[in-house]
Image (cartoon, rainbow, N blue to C red; front, side):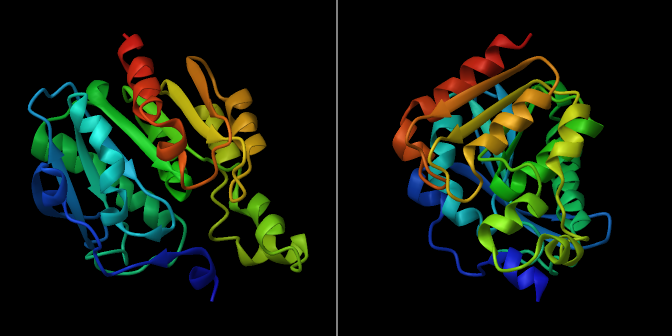
Length: 252
């Protein structure tokens, strides 16, 4: 019941890499627990760096293809990874640590199969995906950590989205899915950029500000005025990619 309230995986693909002219590989990555995850590796021939993109709690990687255009155009390859149970990936999410294991499998694949060093790897987390991205940034020192529409913890989101459930009860129900970004952000080893819309109703803007306040330097915050949860590329337009790009190239 809890997983059905938190995760909205879609098995259908509504877009394909060919529609954007991407040079890509259709791949499967095995996790430490022997679950095969589906992913698309979008190749940039400039090889300026590589983005490990960890998406939010709804849909699948096909719904994020349009967000990759600015990265590929700027010379970055991208690994778009579906968590277990999403898209063509096997299995299902049974506990919070599952998506962390999935993200780590993606990172190891980039290292082992494509030779991407950590110093050229960007960890990008969108909404739900900010948690596994932060966790990887605690374990590894990557080139950059980019968080789009982050939250302090799922237990902090529960009173916003399920106000009729008492806090003590929601915290008990979410004990395996707390996703406490606020506890891990202080430990990251990687330069941080947060992108957040001021009108985000899903993961409120002050949550991003709180995480930024607690995070160690170097760090930067890109405020998208009037941006909501799912429309930041449309509102920010080219700056949605340009601001992170400038942050990355500034980090020596």
